[in-house]
Amino acid sequence: MNIPLVDLKAQYLSLKKEIDEAVKKVINSSAFIMGEELKLFEEEFARFCGSKYTIGVASGTAALHLSLKALGVKVGDEVITTPQTFIATAEAISNCGAKPVFVDIDEKTYNIDPGKIEKAITKRTRAIIPVHLYGHPAAISKIMAMAKKYRLKVIEDCAQAHGAEYKGKKVGSFGDTGCFSFFPAKSLGGYGDGGMVTTNKVKLAKMIRLLRDHGRIDKYKSTVVGFGERLDNLQAAILRVKLRHLNKWINKRRQIVYLYNQFLSGPKIITPHEAKNVKTAYYVYTIRVKNRDRLREKLKSEGIATGIYYSIPLHLQPAYKFLSYRRDDFPITEKIAKSILSLPLYPELSKENVEKIAETVLKHV
Ligand SMILES: *Cc1c(COP(=O)(O)O)cnc(C)c1O
Image (cartoon, rainbow, N blue to C red):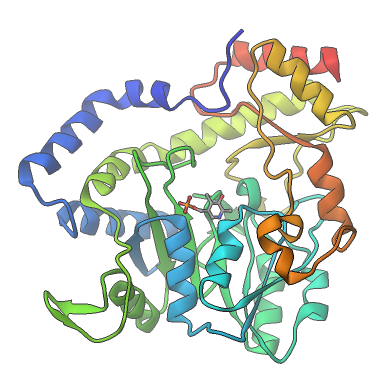
């Protein structure tokens, strides 16, 4: 067997003609930055998300960073988030000069536990960044209510959750902004880096639009000190092609997850939980087992790739040593980090291979 964790080549081959044409069109036009494709992709993605405004940016990290900047987060501020996420979530906070304040996660959804947020709020708290981890929406109603009570901003990290829904509404349309990543392996991925900010607030949209392009209102006139964090036209053209297939892919992913669950549910394996009122847009398929590292080795030796998202929680990352967190500060996060394992998941994964993977897991678990 040789089954990768994701198969970007298979997806390209299934769309080769459309993608090659889109790429050729941009190269022929020589409009690489701030072109027509970007404008159209922003409009189409806004429609997909049910958000009024969208701003294409250089990466998911840039989406988070520019959101925080536009919301005025600065030195001395605190921003609450989860320790069980990709480090970019916290980096965006740190790179505004603010301090990430972590809150433990919910044992079922692996997302920030809304019941533990209030205790972490101080006079300095300015915002909350819930992450919709693995494509499962965070408890956004409760988070929005908490934010309202304490007048905090909410930035949704949707980097893993394109198309996920909470009570029938797409993630990214609840908070002040939603931040998406188009890193190649994400559910909607470009052929390089890319990202998007969604918002329903016109002022915020205008500010983020300025910030992504050096604060410029015309070629050599800038009204604010900004950044060079645009989404390029070539990525936008590729992403426009892929966006047309996204709903189909999300459903394929859900079918595969359903199949995996059928095979794997039992006393030895905890399969993904889907809360009532949500539609998970599965970015990865993550199980929990006791002997995770051993199982991972066994699967590797049988040609099955796996991933761990994430093995080192952010409060224990060497880069965040200066925050002075300790082991056992977030027991649920730490417990989960030791037992999670993600199995191959991509829309092109065949039913036969899902079956083979499940059999191999069951053999070694
Ligand atoms: C991928 C990811 C990011 C960062 O996105 P990039 O496009 O790689 O900068 C941020 N947060 C989460 C949860 C992610 O998975």
